Length: 160
Ligand code: FES
Ligand code: FES
Image (cartoon, rainbow, N blue to C red; front, side, top):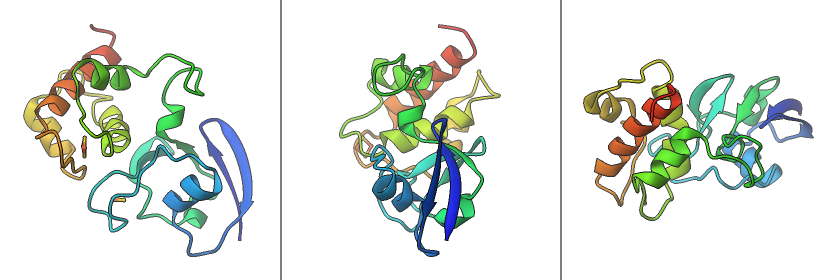
C-alpha cells in the first residue's frame, strides 16, 4: 500500500506491506535508527515518537495508519537537525543531569517527556513518574531521569 508521511519535516511516499509496524518503517525503510525497539509489545516505550503532536509508541501502530501524518523522531527534535543543530531543551537536560546510562531507553524517554511537560512546566516528581510509567529504564533507577525531566520542563518554559 502507498503511504505519504512527513517525518522530521521531510515528505515521503513509500509502498509498504499492510502489516509493517510504524517503528520498522521508521528504522528500516527511512533508516532513522534513533527510535529503538525494546519489546515491540507496547511495554517499554523505547519506540516513542511524536505523531500529529502526540507521543505514541510506534510499535503499536501500523505504518499504513500513519498515512497523512506528521511524525517527529528523536533525530528531528534538535533544531536545525542532522546532529549539527541545537539540542532540544529536554535533550540538553538529559545530558546535563546524566539522565541515562546505556542510553537505550533515552530516545523514547525524551520523546515522551517532551510531550508530558509541554503544558506543565512545574511538573512534580510524582507526575513525572506517573506520566512516564510506560517508559522502562533498566539502568538508572529513574532518579536522574526525573531530575532531567524537571530541568527540561523548566527550560522548555523559558526558565533555566
Ligand atoms: S518497542 Fe514499543 S513499547 Fe517497547
Ligand atoms: S539508560 Fe539503559 S535502559 Fe535506560
